[in-house]
Image (cartoon, rainbow, N blue to C red):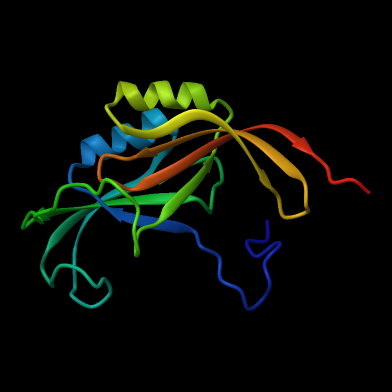
Amino acid sequence: MDDSAGADADSAIVKRTTLIVRDMAASRRFYEHVLGMRVWMDTEFVLDGDGLAAGKAGDRTRLVIMRANHPKVGMIGLLQWLDPPWPAPPPPREVTYGMPVFVVETADAAALARRAEEVGARLHSGPRAWSTRGARGETRHLLGVSLFDPDGHFLECNEVTGIEEPAP
């Protein structure tokens, strides 16, 4: 299989976003139980001080990469400082500059909301019905759940409940 299928020769492919986490067990539980992701890699490494603009040379960290359904894209890395532990501020309670918004497609938004409540995730809204215009002008009807993971990363999770094509 050609890894570049569908991509322009000069365009980049975002394969993974890595999130700094406070508690690896809580973060894994969220991404496994709520989103159904699986561990793809789990390793410890020592920072060299050059590649990552965080921490310092000699810091020992643990990286767990979670994989969804696609084998190459949409992965989420969970990075925790082990030694020395990295002090963390309280998790954010709103989205602001510099913070990502993860948009997740789900087959069952109500079930996702129930699973999020089971692990103690903070729900912002939903499940709620809403609609938006798609890239081709179609109207997409959705059932959405907005929530925060254990570290305050924001996720908008949507179930497509219907699509109305634009009038010709």
